[in-house]
Length: 238
Image 1: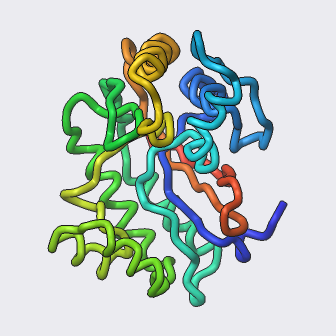
Image 2: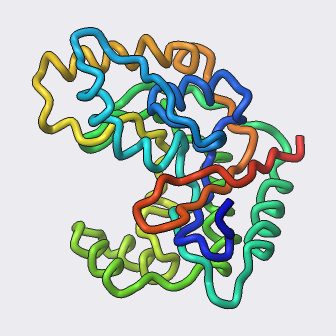
């Protein structure tokens, strides 16, 4: 296993427990399990070729089945993986009850995702805690990444958040989502319809029963462009 101290980036995610039905639904959809490292056969939609479905899920497959709570960051030179782990433990220990989300399938920008139907104050509090409490372990963003982010048309507040927290979409601009696809721009109307129908059917257990947020997960990207892998999950102190 690669050394955590040499990892390119670390991230704080929500990811269901690896032995849960919610985890299995997601990793099968994306075709990769970041916990085991195994590639998995994907549930290909009707009228789709397997290669086309693999392509439309390629980008989220690299990041793994998750919702971001603190965006990927490099470890600061003054911090160690054990320092970062202690921060994860502290955040998770402060959460006393699980958060059960009523989720729906939605198009976010140009991709499909599972999102909460309503704003959840406790979920935003969890994300805020991850940003604040893990940030001391994060290295400053390189100038090239700052320039790239600023080229995306940020608001004044997002510019401030980028400068202070190394990511623009935090606090008021945080939006919990579990990404299911890459960009849909090149799909025909018929392909998009089949994909949405298939996603609704596949994730029906989560859409009807809710998504239980009961832990915080540590993922890493060992090298630039590598698949993110599961490191450890910190269950809430229930």
